[in-house]
Length: 259
Image (cartoon, rainbow, N blue to C red; front, side):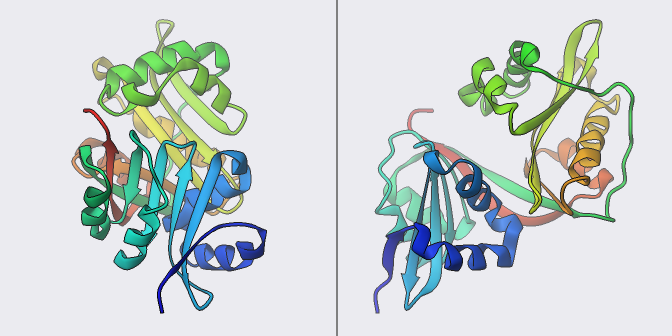
């Protein structure tokens, strides 16, 4: 029996939620965007006899996440037609992705997880909550730290707009923002997004302080914290491991379109 590709709607929400709650770290953004950003979210399911074999998230017509069997991935990709997209897929889906569209850049991404009781925090009074007035400096810092990734997508207006659902913390020196981090928090799980420290201010424990402060707030809301990091970013992985994160899964992360 062939897979049936269907768009998620009210009649399938029970099956969808039952499936994704079996592995919340793996499906966190499916849950998050369906719950809080539904008007900008499409989720497609690959089903056979009421059983889900795969699913695809398309957020804001620019972000694609793909999960499931290789057969399901190939079928799901027939529903997406984007010239420029950010993708996050399981490694076995690489050939299916390349068959759909070429990747201008690709990376190996590690998902790390921490459950309540596993944390080792290093608090600092230097960490402060950032506001929309800081958005310009935040965008400048992130673009400076990693222009290849954040330079594509970070704009002050987008950062300021995110602050109604995202916690941003930072450290200033001599009036200049030199380190920052953010977290999206829900009662199901919370995800630390960006963590960035200016090159001139590294090896001073700032990233550890930022992540510790974010975890302090996260653990008031949920029992599970998540963070993604590039596999080749050994310094960041050491910081996250120091506070208690452990590797959970690997993904292929990349961009389609011109490099």
